[in-house]
Length: 458
Image (cartoon, rainbow, N blue to C red; front, side):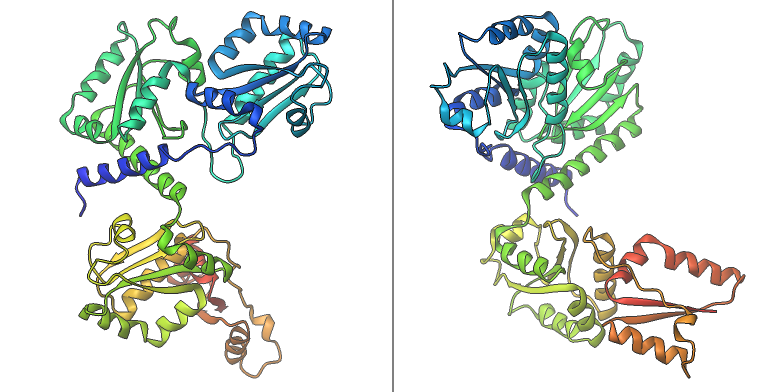
């Protein structure tokens, strides 16, 4: 059983690793790499204004940028960069890359250098405001590949950076000195168990919003409409917890734990599988199977005993149908040390099942009997996000004319490379109706989907 400190250390390592992975521009032109770096340092989107001094509509567009509402949006969310293209004799390659065929032309780039919004031609202040808000909305949306998250509001950007450097999650407490429930919430924060959780996992910041006259943009950005309000941000800036109102100790602890667990799962999926297993995962995906990894050592008597379990006919059939099986020899823990450390393998034998994206579906150490191991595999299969064919359901009418419907069903399942589960039931019988509910359960249906056919017989 891992201690709170060990869990916190593991999460911190993952946060720090993710934070210091370079944000590489997608295909941004060399003319814009400097401005993009400046935008990323400010935690903002990059807005590029392609213009020319001779262009009357560019001059008119400058008036739109001077509008008070536009300036407020620009200050909070955008790094503004004007690129003088002359009479299209300057920055020609850059203009070509972004299909700039006339000016004024504005483009918004996300932190990875991908274009998320463009507009050719003049925009008045109202339409420019709409354009900017749409761009901000898209910046928090899902992109191809890993989710880049959302821009952190400037009012808490420094605190967010401090949290990331410390390998912790940023927790922001929006409060006001006049608010009695904020004072009550302070008592929750002073609880010993809450303080231990906060120390291990969170960088805590109190943001005094006065009587809602301060940090108005920040409150609006995070949907804060009353006090107290507590949010927790993931390392990519996305909200992982948003608690409106006072929470007693037990409720608040549960909320914090959920946030930590959700972030740990997200970090795991962002990190992907360990390099020692990348090739095996690719092969598993090519066969549309889950990856089953056996961490073992030739010297280990329980690993040898586990080979007997793997030789069981039912186990062999289950593994062959749904899993790509790999044995990883860790020696006497002098091999694959980084991999075993990543997955908390501190003894052998140890078994793990991975989904197609490298997410851990199941992990268990020690010897397992054939029945225990089959249960382990079924549990992993039921958690898989891999799309699998639905379990075929046979009906008695499928076998009209057959001398023996049961034999016919078995043969049909065999031809489909499946086993058949036959459920004998009596309509209206309470116990039998209960079993129907069991077979309809999502996890059971998921476990049956890859290897079985179902034949209910009244």
